[in-house]
Image 1: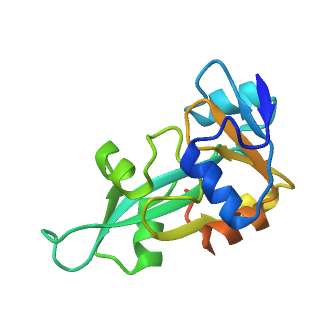
Image 2: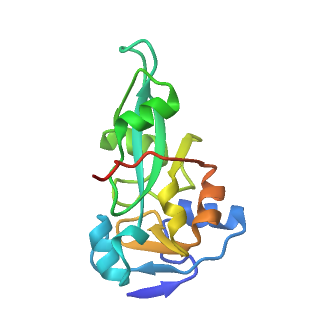
Image 3: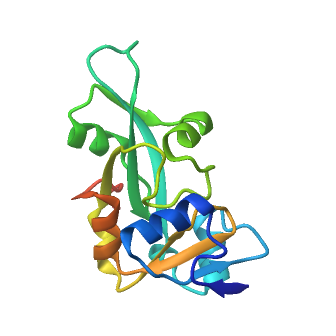
Length: 170
């Protein structure tokens, strides 16, 4: 593992950090940290301290119309309740976006999508559960890189609305 300020981050994400005036340590791992569990194992933290940046497509009343990409930030131990996302957005339907939509929207591949620094400005929802942690870890633009940040700052820089969108546990 190596630690640098932004040298190991994806160049677009490193640019976003500079534009936001953020200095964070970016960690690069030799093995991929595509999944929340892989990232937590590599970092040595709890899975819930990992931020998953997931892209969904929300559709309005016209089911044939183009879907609007929406980024949902949720802790690594939770699953997104698509119905709660749909209700939050007031959409007719919501589905997980495919790899092409993820890359077109964010500029990053699945498994490396950071919470901000995307190609296009999209609506961002952050699950309230992220606020349960002092520090969370998110992808730095590649499947091999992560960075830590307090959740309030991360949510603010992502331009996210704090909502309850994770699946409820029994």
